[in-house]
Length: 90
Image: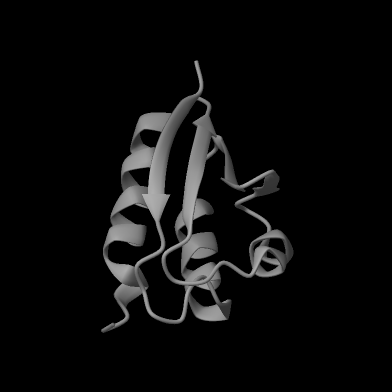
């Protein structure tokens, strides 16, 4: 079963190159598939190009969907990364 979680981008600069790269560094350790959906656009969260083309600003609400053998761990790790504002101060 696919797991979903609602997230809000909290860092001031949004999902730009640095947070996208951090997300990808995290995802390389998981085998489950993961997508991000904002509005009617869905991208593979393991694709830096996909993440960058979404151009998600601060305050954007999105849905993270994970599916696979380690989906619960992946959902938790991704949630914590978003909640930490990707390590950015604002």
